[in-house]
Length: 509
Ligand SMILES: Cc1cc2nc3c(=O)[nH]c(=O)nc-3n(C[C@H](O)[C@H](O)[C@H](O)COP(=O)(O)O)c2cc1C
Image (cartoon, rainbow, N blue to C red):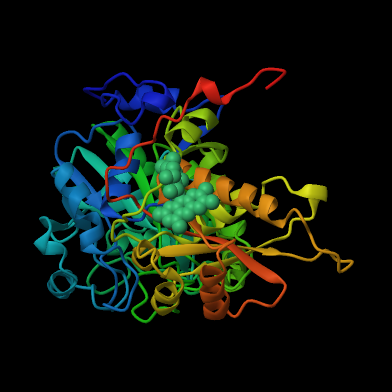
């Protein structure tokens, strides 16, 4: 290991100088918990943000390991998403050929697919096994006795393992551990892992062949899954003896099928975000936990993916990884969307009305966080009379905008409404106060997530209320208090200083 740098406290990570990788890895484990850096911002900027948060500089000749994907219908990472990161590290995109007769079985056909996807327009692309393969040692030899990887691995000093998190027909799911094992293995290396080291050189061309019943691994899939952990550790150790390796997992377009499937099932889970860690076990475990903890609702049909992970014993990859010392299944999340070191008071003092928005989506997860914050507000007699209408549809936004044109231009608008009657049929005199408390919580939460928002009035203006009531088809007893458009700030709005001691009286007017 060479050329390493000191790491700073979490709060300073975003601006910290790049650090010594081993030191970073040791220090990033707080009480045996690895750090996982997370943003909901699935964009080139979000990707750069999680990479920089790691506080480790990619040194020397940098390989960025992606999956080039089996077809244009597969869900591999888009070149536009990854281009700025690859440029930042002066990286070469690296891949290996597949072990099955698909579109990337030979170097020639694989290069044609790479050109179709446009990866060669953003960086040099290297098929690491096009000139052969080498064996690298495994630290855990329970199944495979060595890992077989593309020979060009020797041309690199540092690896960014840039994975796309999704399901996988044989492994249950694929994240950074699969990208390091199957992804870096040559075709023979893939056969070696799939068959848990049982393959022999029995093919006429001398290539490895799995014995009957061993390509799809027996014993509840465990030998295959555990072999992936061992191969991932081999690649990890290989780069840790050079300049290092870091791991990033993008959780978007999450299908139950892998990007190696040319005709994958359509994603049934909302996009989650991008996470990064120096610990591949912690990172895969974090992604698994995020998916497993999603609510089953109209945005998330996780059933098929979770069944697949369970049937294939997919989670074994992280627990075996932990057993062999590759990393920890216990982690601590550093939420990069909450500004580091930002306290509740910092957020309150930085809130301001924002009326211009960037052309950048607000995710379903962000919307849910804002709604949760709104519903955390106090209400008279704990009645919780609030009702929310989340508007993304352009035509509906245009109808409810009225003179507040910024509502039309925001990616999402929240209509905060109140049930004006109590259960006993009496009027709820608190509904405006209750909904105002919820609205303020939502505004503050938007600021905390790096978003911008503004309260636009409905109540008590009859005309304004009627426009909204008609556009949304609100029931008679439900009234709109306000509409809050939310988006990424595009202007230069600043908080106003409203501190006026003359507005305060002590004990007596
Ligand atoms: C009850 C209420 C109604 C408001 N209505 C509107 C509105 O219809 N349109 C608008 O642009 N801003 C509206 N605002 C935002 C205010 O103009 C803004 O909060 C105020 O100028 C102070 O600026 P600040 O929010 O940046 O601190 C409203 C705010 C409140 C609390």
